[in-house]
Amino acid sequence: MERRELLLGLGAIAATVVAEQAVADDDHGMAMDHAMAGHEHHHMGGVINAALLGAASDCVKAGRVCTDHCLQLFASGDNSTAACARSVNELVPVCEALAQLAASNSKYLARYARVAMDICKGCEDECRKHEKEHSACKNCADACAACAKECEKVAA
Image (tube, rainbow, N blue to C red; front, side, top):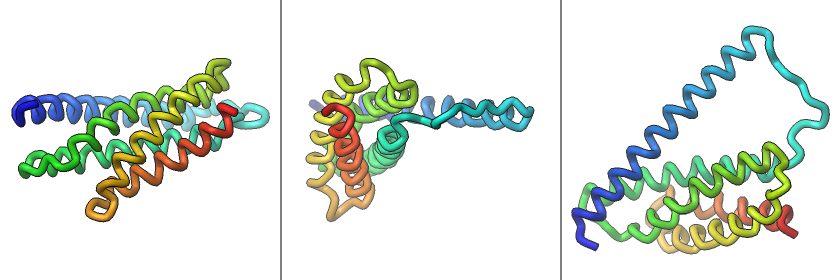
């Protein structure tokens, strides 16, 4: 892949991340408005898969930071984290879906968690290659390991 293609692809990734964050920020604002209007809903028992939901959400956050860090490196001409960025690019949407399935206690959660666990482990392996030089990669690898551990509990 030529450098120009790589930068164009990563630019598209960055645009997606920014758009997703804007939607998430808007959703959070709407949820806060809803709660402040006195429409809070209380459910018995809370979220059944709270640990998995938290781990998947943490993985998404750490992945976005890692992707941004990789984009900064690419902009400076350093392509050493290209495989890392590629694996994080696969990870983020998988963990977003995992969080949704965990929150809704989907009947497909156990099967999906097996796939997510493999993707988390793969991303962790890539990010570990750069963890000594880049804290964003270390944090992503740690979040992937934690998410894979929670996936294993659900997938078993």
